[in-house]
Image (tube, rainbow over all chains, first blue to last red; front, side, top):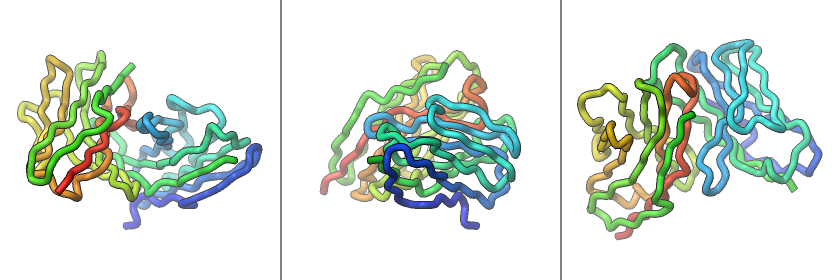
Length: 115
Length: 116
């Protein structure tokens, strides 16, 4: 199993450009999430999905869109990049169900710089 | 709302010594789960240990143990016999019904440096 994969690993954008960060998992996990990590801020939840066709907002959703058309894929779209979106982005997945113990599996991250 | 507080931005420890990384949490949920993750300089997130709110024993995984004090709402990570490879950022996180079963709420992290 490849686990959770993210592409690209690095990206530089100009202000106003749009792009999609790709995330895929091959573990048949129902739950998928996007987090951003900024220095001194920990990881903050952007959007999440509890299954194909179901998405919801997290703590910091502004400027981002998501969709979940398949169980495997959960892309994150930046609509009009801003310098404040310079960050490291992590995608994560976990098995479904109402249990707390399920570990979240993280992708390797995408480092995005917006100039 | 759930909140995780890690009050130590940085910690230093000598090799082979034990170190405790602090984590306190705030939640109105009765049932919840607490996690610790390690993030080395390479950037990946590595799961270390889990503690359920109703688990009777403190969790242990090799050199990692969790000092869980439910009444104080604290879930401190203890690393015994520190190694140079333990130098990393450590995050405490939780999951509960309020935040949903599908996501984690993270603290801001503690940077641990292990010296020879």
